[in-house]
Image 1 (cartoon, rainbow, N blue to C red):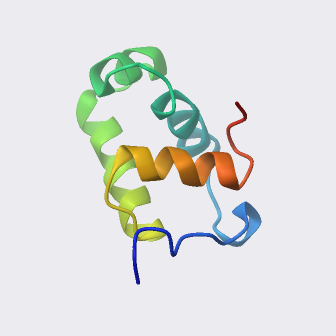
Image 2: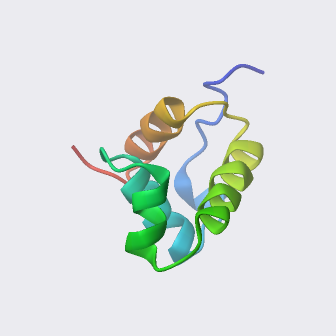
Length: 77
């Protein structure tokens, strides 16, 4: 599997509302610390969202995560 294997439609990978919010913010210019502040959670919680999504989607970087979010329609350009 490579970094683009996570091409399943979004409804086959259940994401909760906070994960979707994290994805939308991760596709912006905000740092992870700023994302944590916007979500009113600790930076460690944001790290957890990121790592969990990386594992579940078999991805390795924020850029590829953002590309996936756009591809499945969670984020629009």
